[in-house]
Picture 1 (cartoon, each protein chain N blue to C red):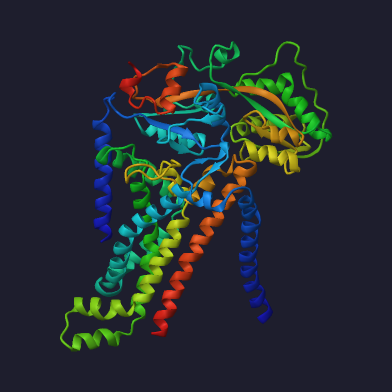
Picture 2 (picture 1 turned 180 degrees about the vertical axis):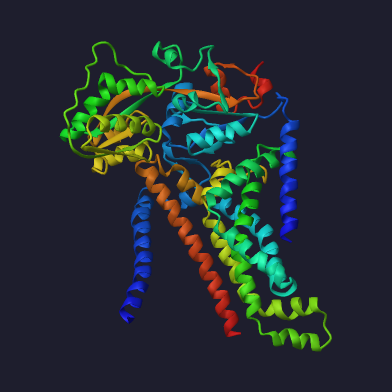
Amino acid sequence: MKLRSFTALLLILTMALGLTALAADFDAKQVITVVSREEGSGTRGAFVELTGVQAKDASGEEKDNTYSEAIISNGTNLVLTTVADNQAAIGYASLSSVLHNDTVKALKVEGIEASTENILNGTYKIARPFNVVTKGELTDELAKDFMAYVMSKEGQAIVTEDGLVSSANDQTPSYAAANKSGSLTVGGSTSVAPVMELLAEGYMELNPEAKIEVQSTGSSAGVTGALDGTYDIGMASRTLKDSETEKGALATVIGTDGIAIVTNLANPVEDITVEQVRQVFTGEVTTWEALNK
Amino acid sequence: MRGLFLASACVCIFAVGVICYFLFANGLPFFAKYSAWDFITGTEWAPLRGIYGILPMIVGSFLVTFGALLLGAPIGVLTAILMARFASSRVVRVMKPAVALLAGIPSVVYGFFGLKLLVPFTRNMLGGNGLSMFVASILLAIMILPTIIQTSEAAINAVPNSYYEGSLAMGATHESSVFRAIVPAAKSGIVSGIVLGIGRAIGETTAILMVAGNQARMPTGILAGVRTLTVNVLLEMGYAADVHRESLIATGVVLFIIVMAINFIFSFINRRRVVQ
């Protein structure tokens, strides 16, 4: 029995592999598999706003028109895996997570390559801010010093290295270690967390007595945490909601992230316009063939 | 010593109590803001616009679970019968740990297996994009197998051997003795195995999230995607704020009530059988 089921499994495996190999030529008649993020995700919020997938409806209310057949993945990695495994797929993810990933292809938008330089010079259209969130002005000495580090020449160098676009210039001050001690909890957006971890490491190297913990939970959890004191500093990869600023949340931009439009490596499409992105993600265009007309 | 036992039991009861309290205390306020009827019968889910209809997820949960049962229940029960009454002890020695191992595989590993193997296979063989109700059901069927097999096998083994011997003595074959005398006697145990399987299937989240496509609209076909109640909660919890967050906890309340209802119906059926 066991041997038989093992053989069956092996057979399925071989067939699946064989079929993948057979289908290696890209078929433009394929229905596009649209891969999106869940409602409430910072990346989705930024994406639908920047591409016009979200638009005012007849009653003047903002409406997210993401195609109802779009696959919903709840994380950057799941989006990338899904796109890497499916020739007909298109998805989006923050540029920093795509730069070092060679399993998918980032498309040019309006002929502009998705790169750090192009976000800095403002030519790449799809970009969003990475915020740290505090409840009013910071009072804790360690938190203040950490923020000074994040916004300093050294901190912004780390931000830039991670693929984000920094607003730092020649006037940005250097950071002088003040040998602070104590502990801080920073939590929130899963998009901001990786760069925050690098920043925390850099800070702890200069201030060995300090301990900074970075928790990756989500933008809204980051804002809520900063407001109720769970986190000393929150992280959000979107602009704050009115309900959040009313409660005293204060946001500081530490860098700007581009959103890359990604497709399968086998897909011959190299360039896409913002309007085409909107058509694909609202389901107005459903095949690759129709998109290229 | 008795105090220790009592304390241990209290931890369990306390945990159930706290979870119930948390769920209802956090979920019920939502219904003050949004009609429970609209919540359960609404077919549109657009939390950022304040529209919360979870009927697609309720239907999705039931369909995926039903598909899993359709596939998993016969395979599981027949495997249990094989292990208890047909297979040689050598085969059983291999199968028992294999089934136990199946039960011990973490659900994210099942999800990855589905995503990397079943999804491309379905896409290439049957069409669609592969992330579908079909794959979710197959995956769940495999996941509930150990529950069904282990419970059913225990039930079949618990039937006194005299049933079997009596049947043989009256001239029945081995097969008909097993299927006409032993299996009916073990019916309530087998049914409880299947109900436990339903519980596991309806509550499974991570693996389903990875293979089901998760579209929040009414299910449109077996090869199209589907979103279940559990997936709805896990998918959006990380980024949800305000009423959106409460709506997800309310989704949990609905799921909790459904699972309780299944358990009550099951224990009602069981009790009636005992009375008979």
